[in-house]
Length: 317
Image 1 (cartoon, rainbow, N blue to C red):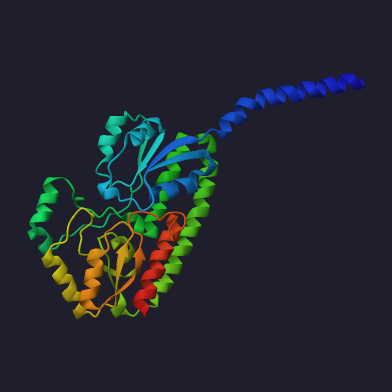
Image 2 (image 1 turned 135 degrees about the horizontal axis):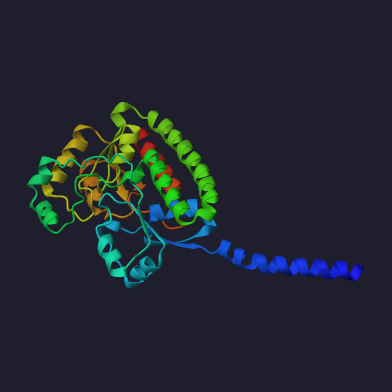
């Protein structure tokens, strides 16, 4: 009788192992996902967790405005089940890359449902010959500002779009994605309140921020700050002498205390403006890309917290 029990127990154990083997293997299989740039890549990792293998095309400190895709990028896109982009004409090179790679997976625009801010060009910008040249070569962003991730409120929409696409592609792990989403959204909302409290401490005449290129309007719109830049929405556009002179005049007239460099932009123009106006360099802001792991903006939430803290500390003095 005892031998029979041992045999039955062994047989059941063996059957369980055989039955669970393929299922266990299937459960650990990761979905190949391509994210176009580091901010979206970080969001996908937070939501997908261990269930996704993320390839980010434009990595930390990379400039998506001037990015040139590589053969390795085309290979990653061709193998991806899900491709997540910012949209709003941010990735001007993406359609060509998708065509070249014969991508057949799910293409997701993370900004779907966001009300984009219009890009209103100044008269000086319209008069600038270099800008017309940019338009002819297709470097302008179009009607809307694409940098919507600079608003934490918009980030919730990014997260919702990413979550629903991962869940649709991999229904077996949908509950895990939605649990990760809930935790992430609560962190985003808490940080939003934290930054609003910080900005509220600034006097109303200390709320103008000068940066290299025009990438933080959504941040300004959310918290009541005004952002000005010698360059337009793209780092490819060059500031004219007229624009720089106009900006220097405004800094002097409004007694703006600090200007900021960006991680993806050449700092020399901002340094020149600081020298000519006596404004100090208030620090480095992260606009279109996260930092590397050893710098202060290695995740999306760290980036927004760093930018908010840096701006408030510099303008509050």
